[in-house]
Image (cartoon, rainbow, N blue to C red):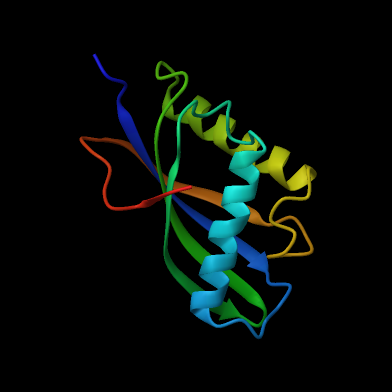
Amino acid sequence: MPPTLMRYEIELDMLERDRALSEAQAVELLLSEFQLALNASHFSAVCADDIAVAVASRAVPQEGVARFAVALELAERTPELDDEQAVALLLAEFQRALNASYFWRMSSEDFRVKVISRGAIEKRRTLRAV
């Protein structure tokens, strides 16, 4: 039986390093930072295979603070984890990537990662695998 695909909806709140970026440029930069972190095996505790990443939106609700709505689709490495354990693992992997200076081109400081939802999906949507 193939592994169950999971979809995480997350929000990233950060002080953007370059506030002059357009929405398209900021989204592309965020996707490239995900690619670099994944290439360096960050998030490997969460998933052994490719992770599909999509940035649904970018808003700037406060001066300089950008909020990115992001979807991650993946087959979890440890599918028996409950929601709380899986979310804790994902947040730990984000922190590991931040500690290794990934995402620094986006923000000069650590940023807030909030998991909005986690759920099983039947198949991947047309997200970009990074």
